[in-house]
Length: 317
Image (cartoon, rainbow, N blue to C red; front, side, top):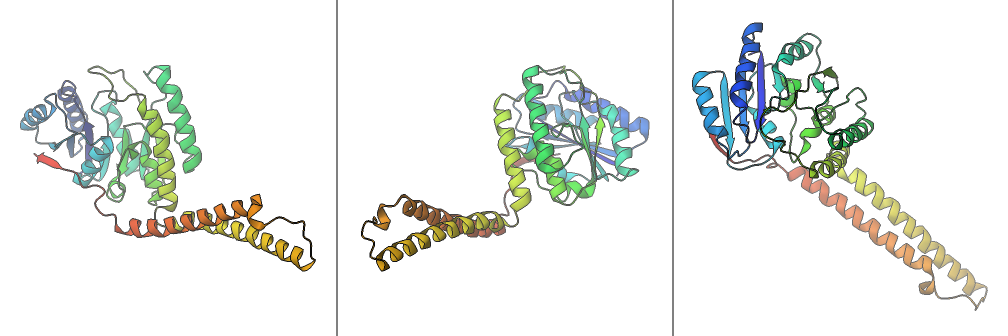
């Protein structure tokens, strides 16, 4: 199969008929073999019933329904697991992503041999309160990830080589940084394509102001997990050893200074416990020990986590 199109959705009943018809038309015009995987993330507006009716008239459509709302990352991860195509295309269900971009995205994966091609909505139909924070997060993501050629990490329209989606995990709200996850997994040939950003035709956006705070936290998380996820002791252990050694050096210096005063019968010196540096040394030693133990526990946890993407799927068609 040439292409699998994965569409995560939440309460998008009005846009689904137009979207699936548009995708099918583009696929037929280009002679692609394809499937459309619609992942219903716990909708309550009749989206699942609509998927059932659409599937009855189009055998290329497959549906997956969550029992409750888990989030876009969960929907993408389950959709990735279900794909059969050599190239996987993701897009949002709100008709702001154009299926007409699919042929060029497919070509860049199949012919130019990219692992991942991310869309860039250079001209956006969003208010300034959304575009400015997005630019700041994208700049921070480029700097922290080292992926300098991407302008829009969070664009829903992306293309992947099948081996990429089969070898990465998307969890929490990490869908914003899939290119970073792919890079840490070893897929380094990442490209970008300017795509059309269409004005929303139906419904309202599902994202509020909390996405900006979550975006920053997710960026820090993905940076830490990508760099130290398989070796947390390297992070916590290094900091712990440095803190412990700093405390020990101060403590040894205080003891040596006290012994020197005693040896030379200097009686005006104060007790070690009355010295501010004593408490600084004590805190440094305690923090260092705790960080080292944290790294040890994190090593054990990282080796035993195997149900991070265990989601309740109610039904498949």
